[in-house]
Length: 149
Image 1 (tube, helix red, strand yellow):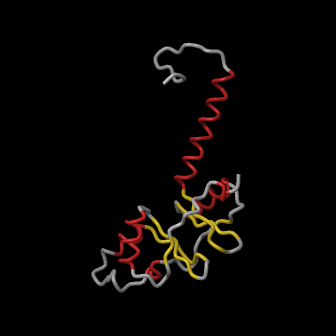
Image 2 (tube, rainbow, N blue to C red):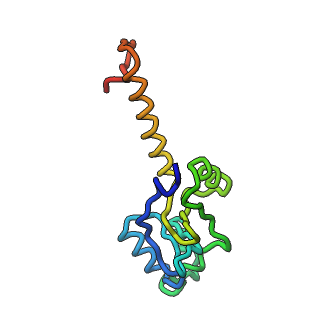
Image 3 (cartoon, rainbow, N blue to C red):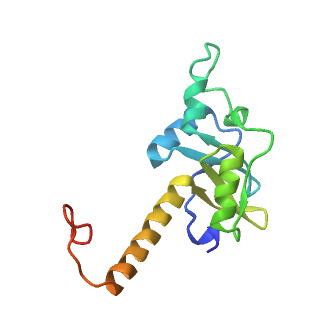
């Protein structure tokens, strides 16, 4: 399965020169915990609510004047749209991150998070359980009957 098949394609994006205060309002209004910073259809970075929350601790921080580009790493971690789930999990683990922009031909195509992978795995496990249940003879368990909840 390609990452693009499970990625969210309705990505909330902002320009790098957007003031942090505007970005926070956008995140709140869209009910998202991160935004992808996009310039010329390419994602130079990703900013999370945690990144912005930590900035508030700086006495000199001015959310109305500081551009969101101040929070971007030098190199953004992305994943190709045709990569597999195992590639994604390895990338997230190696970089100690929980979400990553998905790119196709260098342009932003979506975003995917560790939570998306967990949901996918849960759905796959449910399919496995259904297959086992449908091909196994009925039997009783002492205590809880896991098949009939």
